[in-house]
Amino acid sequence: MNNRDYLIDQQGLDWAKLLSTWHWLLPREFTVWLVNRFGDLFIAVDDSTVHMLDIGAERLRRLPKAMTISAGRLMSLNRRRTG
Image (cartoon, rainbow, N blue to C red; front, side, top):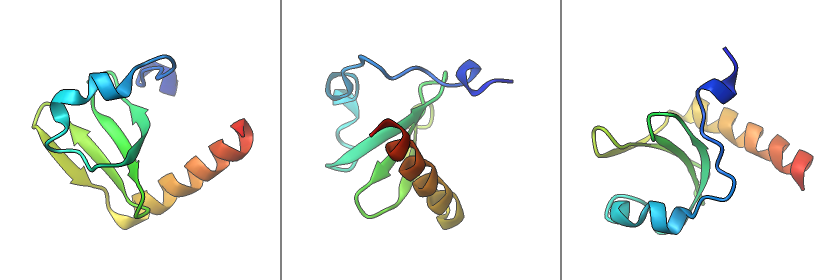
């Protein structure tokens, strides 16, 4: 299975508009990292944590530290490749 089969391409999406109804649950500042085909978001927060917005459960869940560290490394690698 290719990750493109599971993830939504984020290019060209207006996140402020798409997430406006979720403002009550989301942190004030964050970066959208991944979005799956269920509409769940994985976001990076300025305090170096990663959270999952589970839209079905209307819940924002902080991911375990080990996953946060891995996600941070992946985002850092991605920034180096694209930046």
